[in-house]
Amino acid sequence: MSSHRQEAVRRVAAPDVTARKGGTPLVCLTAYTAPMADLLDEHCDILLVGDSLGMVVHGLPNTVGVTLEMMILHGQAVMRASKRAMVVVDLPFGSYEGSPDLAYANAARVMKETGAGAVKVEAGPAVVENIAYLVQRGIPVMGHVGLRPQAVLVDGRFKAKGKAGEERARILEEARATAAAGAFAVVVEGVAEGLARDITEAIDVPTIGIGASAGCDGQILVTDDMLGLFDWTPKFVRRYADLRGEITRAVAAYAEDVRERRFPGPAEIYFAKAG
Ligand code: KIV
Image 1 (tube, protein in one colour):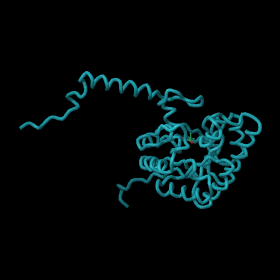
Image 2 (spheres, rainbow, N blue to C red):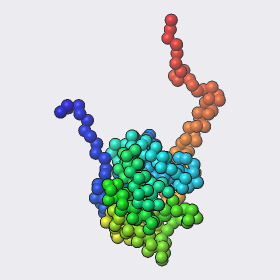
Image 3 (spheres, helix red, strand yellow):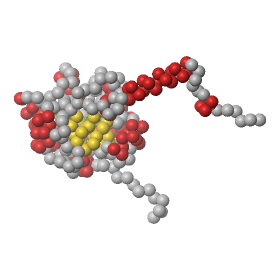
Image 4 (cartoon, protein in one colour):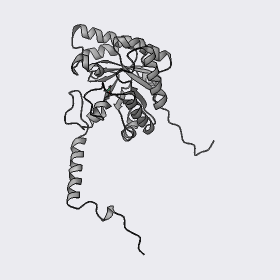
């Protein structure tokens, strides 16, 4: 065997994620593009090609308008630029809820055309059967309970869930059913701290929290939120950078240089060869 042969990097896979239950917290972020995937790969266990890309990248009001084609295109870009992290692609609204066959056809298409390690679905009661159908046919599924952004038209707005009573019990039951259907991990979004802890104790696969406290087995954030690209971030986001400020300063400096004919300068132009 050639000594120049490169050591293959093994990607994190669904069983590796499940095995992390109760261990070192899983580090997860969203990625939608190749350059961002390249930057995040070495730091993350999971890169989620979330349907939040509809709002973050495409300027949609919510995730309802996101299509399977958009998810596949962004999934391919993230797969190309990452080597180690598991890539999970969201199934968009309307692509998996209707029937097990619909879910299978669309999930299989995502897996084949992107090469991703799993799909994620928002796991309301109507979807549990479809999760089991996919898992039994070889498609790893991550569930998503609590605040379900694809249900925004029914809910009316994005609002934390499970602070009390019946809704709390319902979400706990949905998480249990999702894990029992074979999901290898469950995202828990926007729920009260005690509920996140109860879900984490109740299921034997990792919970990945977003706005759900440190009581989960891992954490995920929308990368553009934690990098400070927006002028507003939700309460549960910690801003680790101020890219909005940085970009604004850089673009203003470029605009001024162009207007004052300071850019391009001698170091930034080509000269004809002498003679
Ligand atoms: O679409 C998304 O980015 C998500 C995460 C916020 C969990 O589902």
